[in-house]
Length: 319
Ligand code: A3P
Image 1 (cartoon, rainbow, N blue to C red):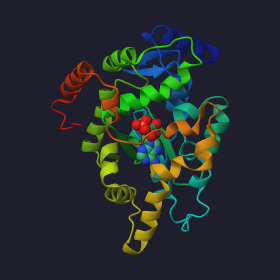
Image 2: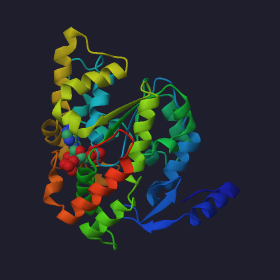
Image 3: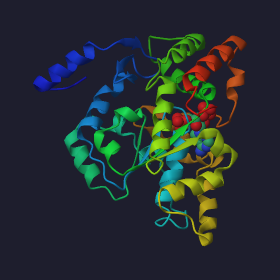
């Protein structure tokens, strides 16, 4: 972690004292930090995000556990917030930019020249639209204490794991540390995955959505797949920009623009790169519910089902 000065030394000492596990994917290690497994490559960004970011009351955050449908929700949220500016959708930014460019993850982008980036963020057109994978308790205080709105998406843990397995395996070819799907599964079951445990992440936002429904809108990927119109309406209502009857056509266009087939087929998503790290095409794999049946053995099903049942018991949340 490239921290400088006396405070930097203290922070480095603190990091060295944290429990640590081998990572999978881009991060060589995961550190157990603030009760979640933080990918080593994100530690600096998380630190900067927590320390320097100042929320504005009209900010909109997309939050998620990785591989839960974040790309889709980013696209929908961006399109809804900006629907007055791009009425025809012909020149829509989503046609030429990947959703991750338009709605950046702050824990990944607040690295390098942080002072300059923070100033730039403060001058952005409002409402600003950002994203995060941080668990709720680790969000910067100004986010938790302000009136900003957070839209959270989660997905059943079986498909989340399988989607993550495919995604993070891409980086394994460049890493000396390779693991099998069985090993990755064991780690997932032990909670050892970037921003995990999965259940703590989901429960953190679930509880907040119950106590502060005007602050956190809790969505499930499967529900969006089942009835996208209903959920797009919910998102627009939550953001305080409901679609009126005459705007129904606009809503349908947004849904089409953000659909898996449309997005996957765009030049930018077929051939572009995100942060020079990953090809955009990897954010669009199958986009289906239930691919896990092609990867899980009966014993894996039994094991994860038991863990999830136990961890979510009494919460009112189920998958
Ligand atoms: P699969 O790997 O199961 O195909 P995230 O965006 O959080 O990284 O999640 C990625 C998952 O969302 C991938 O799932 C991806 O295919 C799916 N996805 C991406 N864009 C989508 C869209 N517009 N509609 C539905 N699913 C989408």
